[in-house]
Image (tube, rainbow, N blue to C red; front, side, top):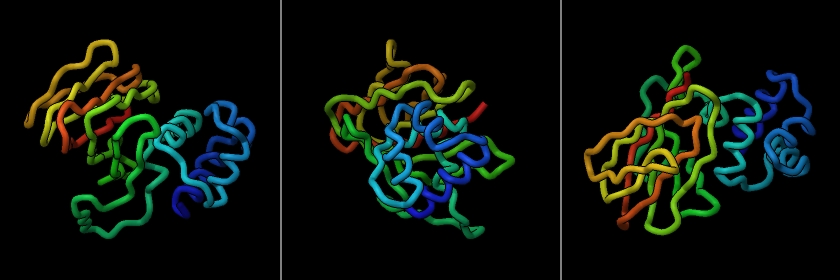
Length: 178
């Protein structure tokens, strides 16, 4: 939470926006944003994404702590955030460095309501490779069923869906910023 708090303050300052304006743009309470910037609170994935859209910054930049040159993240480790309305967890594996425009996530999902994502910043493309299980993935109005080893790319700046169809569904998601 300390990294997220510092990153939110840094990105809000970079954007030249007040706490009130960022909260308004993100559709969150000013008190919620204030708590997050002070390092308290437990934000959902949806709240953090909304703040990133409001700040016009990639999600991974909120978690971009200094890293060693060699980086190892074991399965089920690393900064992980859960969706509020679906059994869906995203773990940041690698944030794109300043000259790269991609972030890599490990996705773990279970059957039930899918994770419907609101549009991200313009130009974002998401790439998904399904590792285990089965899932409906892609644009919210036309998802595709993926099986292990399948790959799909779709515009992340349109509503999109990830819905596990089998227990233990796992995938790798690459978010490419246009």
